[in-house]
Amino acid sequence: MTAGRGARALVVLLAAVGAVAGVAGCGVRPTDLLPLPGRHGSHDDATVVTVQLANSRSLVRDSEVKVNDVTVGNVDDVAFDNWHARVTVSLDPGTVLPANVTARIAQKSLLGAEYLELAPPASGPPTGRLRGGDVVPLARTSRYPDAEEVLAALSAVLNGGGLAQIATITSELDLALGGREREVRQLIGTLGTFVGTLDAQRDGIVRAIAGLDRLSGALNQRRDTLAHAVDTIPAGVRVLDDQRAQLVRALSALSDLGAVASRTIDGSKRDLIGNLHDLQPAVGRLADAGADLTRSVSFLATFPFPSNTAFPAMLKGDYANLYVTVDLSADNLARNFGLGGLFPGIAVPGGRPSPGPGVPGGVPRVGPLPLPVAPPSTPPLAPAPRPLAPVPLPAPAPLPAPRNDGLLGPALGGR
Image (cartoon, rainbow, N blue to C red):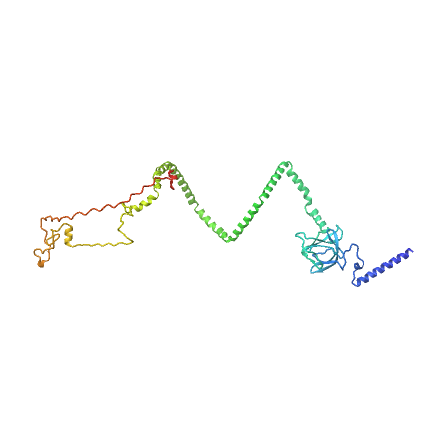
């Protein structure tokens, strides 16, 4: 009876396998008829999205899709598309995710199965909502390191990464710091103060670096000029080196001149101060004269008469006329010089010339001067002209009282 039950179970199993094979041959997946435990969503109401992965690794169909360790869907298909994996994912209808969601392949445990993790973006706020037909691009997909990679990295550290030298490093540090604990503590405290000061001056350091960057930019713009200067400086340095002896002698002579000038100034300082002190009253009076000194310059041309009243009726306007009569006749010259009887034939003042002896036709002739010469008769002098009436001069304005409050007053001892 037990053998009969086993035979019937075997027949049922074979029939189930045949049915599954027949369904698979018709293009229907067995999971559509017999859903696996833990499978979410259905092909009718599920939200289907596509995730692009650089490497799908061990991610297979029906792998779980989780959000915050909660299963919200399954992987429907994994396909190859242009050198990367294209994973089709079905999500539960109530799953709400942002449009800029990120996807990563994770592992349940060290030896567990892999699943697809969906999460909001790590940088930036979430935007929009993930809907059916959306695609998560390669830029927002990655994977966690698996157990093999972690073990390989640990093996590299333990075997060839210098972990065996930690004991040597520790012993050497112990020898270096042994007996110097107080100094090391002080050093650490001083280092903390130094770091704190640097942090407090961080803004100034940043400004200094920015200024140095601007200076570097300016120097870079004048790179050709600086290169020319660098090429020219050696020639100038050679000239200075050739004339070093002359420069040394010149500087020595300048030093001697300075010493002599210092002695001269020190020796004549008292006399110079005395001269300046004696000059103070004269300069003070000159400063007190002020505008009167400049007004007196215009008076010098018409001294002793003021320029505004010296010749009040001489010029009217901007021009003047002058008429001159010059009489150079002999009688006038003789009369003017008192020689009226000296030359014969020359009339006396007030008469006409008469013909002299031996003058034909009555033409006057001047004969030889008789010796001794008689003094000529002096004609009566004309009455003396009346003296001109004196021109009234205006009374000079009184000079202001001397003041020492001018520009030079304080320096000259004024009040």
